[in-house]
Image (tube, rainbow, N blue to C red):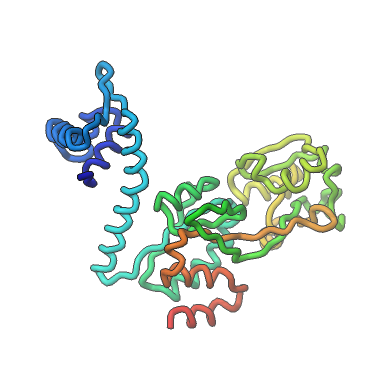
Length: 306
């Protein structure tokens, strides 16, 4: 009774704001669109919209149908895409969402050998899902989510693939550069530079500063790692980043990693996927490859593709 066209119409009317605009987006006449939905309303025995002057307002039934459309249409689009790839003899595509800025540099080291091992699988990295990747997984917009902060939900599976230490980054001439570790109180007069992320999701706040009742003198946000580290190197502030990333940049920039607290802050990068997709061979292979230390990827690649 409910067909894909009904879901598409409800979704487009909501997005476009009118029947006329929705009809244009769907390449239908307005009369055909109206007739299609009127027929559905008669079959269901309930209204989808209520007219308020020239505008339409979704009824409770319409709101429910819109929610169904938001869940089902991306799945249908993905199914058509995958089946089209199968028809062309292609393996498929792996769409990866990023939920952390520094993870991108780590991901590049995994993608390169993966593309070599799986030449018939395309990889697409989507950074627009930073800090909103759970919805993208449920909405079938991505297949894997790279995140240091997994949210365990029914239907999703997160697997740790990489351990790292979160450290303070200071310039080589900074007073803390030679310290074995830094205490929260020592950052009370510092300018803290971070990615544009909510404070509750910054480890240096929720695991280091706030438990001690400390806030930095000032907090600046910068989107790119290179500019952030250039600011740190020039003495404009300090930052908190993964140790492995800082050590890579330390070769070309005058920055130094310093442990946060005597015990440090240990973190992990996780790969999240829909539970049903974790058995797909090329998805599973990416997860297994991501677990391998540098230098062992070649051996693993060969095993995974055999």
